[in-house]
Image (cartoon, rainbow, N blue to C red; front, top):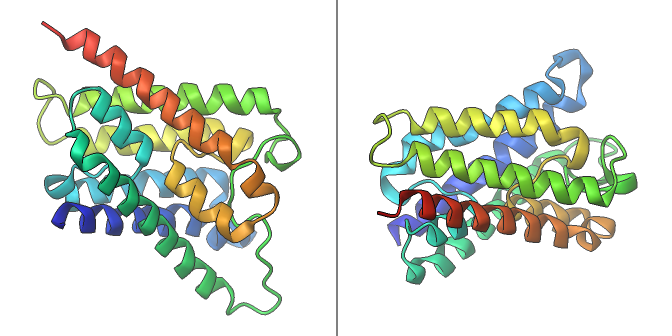
Length: 226
């Protein structure tokens, strides 16, 4: 239960910090954070939580990460459903807090609510094929960094920095393409508030991160087998 509470709180923080920066701070040009600032915000959420709850739950904050770690032999299968449930609930809690804050703004409309999308709902107008490739490949590399930096042979105490910077880099690459998912919980939470097209396109942002993470888990397991 301690692990599940930690995952709930951590994923809530990820949505608050990452999606919150996109919906609130980046909405005001005078603040000047833009998509670079949003990228940094997402990285900071993982970096800060890695040191806050990493020693409790491992700080997955992402169903794709948990699945990749399980396939890579780093997680017990019995824990996996609970982790995913806690992560999705935490993301929904974060999105709910954002909705309550934003609804206090005159003229507030939900709109896309920082949802992920492709085609006309891609920030840069990228196609579904571009979105499929981007989400799969970046999720793959995210898991490779996570598995490698948390390996017992890696330098101790630096995993949180590597993972946080990796997520920042991922957002710098892919915000124009898909608004960056690589995390089904983050995508589900925002799509449920946006509704419509966001839910219709949600399948891609569940399937591709999980697929990319799963392949990374298999690759890393082969690398490290004796």
